[in-house]
Length: 154
Image (cartoon, rainbow, N blue to C red; front, top):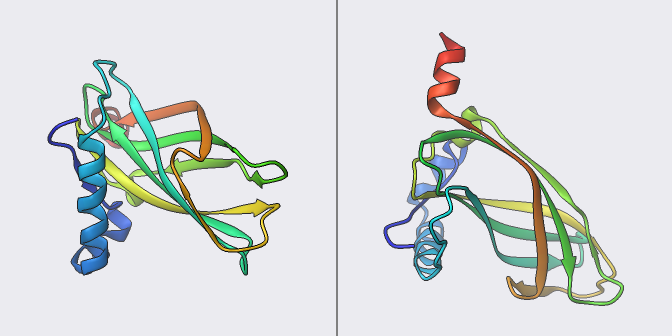
């Protein structure tokens, strides 16, 4: 997908000057531009990687929410189910509830990048997962368009 700008959520915009954050945003932009999302007008949820920390028994999961809808959005709600390709390993499912105060507005062909700390069972040492090693599904997706929220606020 050419010309996809990756943004931080509005609530985390203060991190935008951090060099590591800038590198990550550029890397994610480059990766997303290599994906053919097709013509479907939808919100794409793209799992980028997972970093498991055994001490915490949690995985930092990096996900981009790509807006290919015809209008700008200001809220995202969905459920994500994970199923790693490893026997005996369980990754907790999660619910995403981004409101406008947290997320801000995401225009068409923009993405918002988020990190989630998710509980994991069955691993005994630190490990990095690629996006190919964790299967996932997204359901009950609901977005709020900016115009609709503005009408509600008036």
